Length: 109
Image (cartoon, rainbow, N blue to C red; front, top):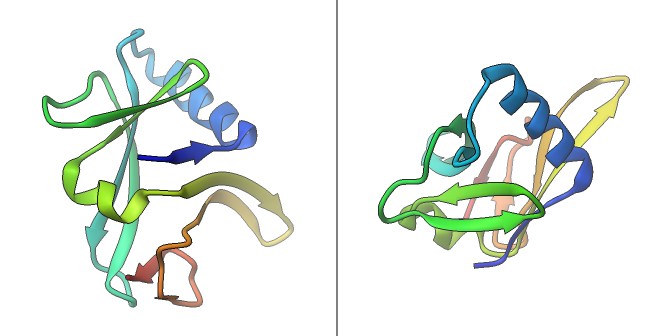
């Protein structure tokens, strides 16, 4: 699985991890869940450890946990963090998506 995270996004994730006070086994859980206006949406949260069947992607010192269902939709995805006049947040550049919606948080595959 090829999942990448930009340095801007990694900095923001590390800020969240420091605020949570998590240990060295912790990482970022990235998931695809049913929902949103286009069929699927992304979900992220900090977890203390990977699950038994998770794929663990390492990006520098950051560990990213991906479950088997989500892995099929997250291959070759790049996670970024953008800040603009309209707001700031994480974005997903997903070449596997066949469509999306105006909100930018859901996609179809």
